[in-house]
Image 1 (spheres, rainbow, N blue to C red):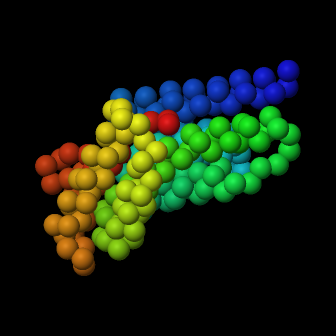
Image 2 (image 1 turned 90 degrees about the horizontal axis):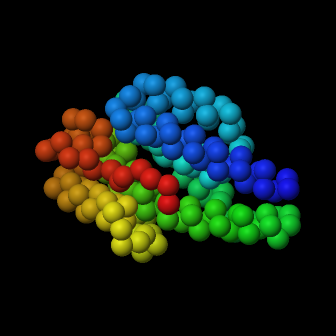
Length: 193
């Protein structure tokens, strides 16, 4: 019974994160930032890693400053790494839940690394951008042939073209974070895997 209550609480948090993400995608970045911060405080720095990963990944999109966006994307990657590091403890049920979360987060890696690549490119750090872009490309095989996977793959392609045009030394950061010269979004769509 306690396990079912914990699962229901976990699902409720993912629902709450998703609701704030809808607010963000509806255009209310400031309100979304505030609500995400409230949820972040509730989850805590050592809270459920899947919650931290998901929230931080979305929170990055709510930032106006590219350095802040990078910091949140790094938090998301750090949380994802704690789910996929192979460590398990406790009962079989705990290990199974951790395994299922680990599988879900693996599908996040292409988007996480693409987001970091975009962040670094926007900050004029082309080598770091290229490194994360390679990681995104290396992990893209876990994505399905669906709109989410197609969006991430397209984002990788757009950023590769951008970095190729800028050359090995990089170029000027984009005029708007995450936007290409024509105003198109360079980053991946943000969705739960």
